[in-house]
View 1 (cartoon, one colour):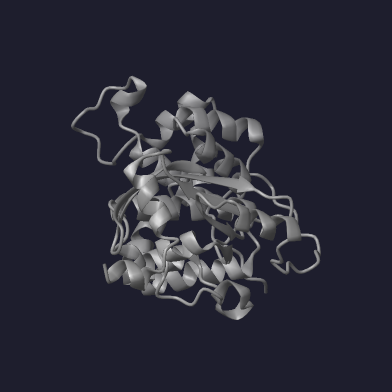
View 2 (cartoon, helix red, strand yellow):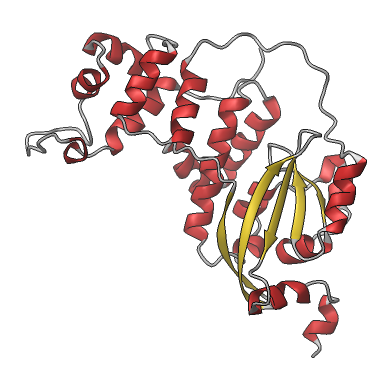
Length: 286
């Protein structure tokens, strides 16, 4: 039997219901409440569905619902756009996946050229599982100078960015706010699961992280969802010091994801980022 990523509708609804405080939606928060967040009957009433039907959804007695009902529940639970999209993916009827040609995770020549041409940024190409398929020297020296630069070229040894973030102490130490970074990683991975629910490799990645990292396992159980495609991160690099970098993700024509970090032009952070193009041993000796 094919290993399917666990995207449990009932568990997700329960987590989202329990995070909403009654006063957020105009309800009185009485001391007699015995459960965190909203009651099932309150969500059902706000969504315009019967309590019995909503209970069946939350108890996983009903595998899926219509998009209209799910959107009504999403509004009642005050879900954000990414959370709403995720609910629709895991809550509607899923057809058996069609047979597809195996993905080779190969880069097109234009993508490889792009990575080499963005000289003022730290650039990598990832697949949707966050395996690193290519990186330029700045990205390599920013995140993982302790790894061989050629690893992304070896399919069996490609670094996975989320695994590095959770399981590699050298990479973890880079982040100025590891708590925020860890949450961002897990919410993105949960979002991806909505699109790739039959991916055995993705299921294997989640299983490995759950076993090897208690932090990941605890965050995964929260079932928070977000598609993290841009923002700002603070790094504490052991060679060039503090770096405040903006990051962006963009879908590429070959099906992969371009990830790049850059700094405000003419800022000390840009100067520090550019310093990563210099041989690290020569920098340390100064």
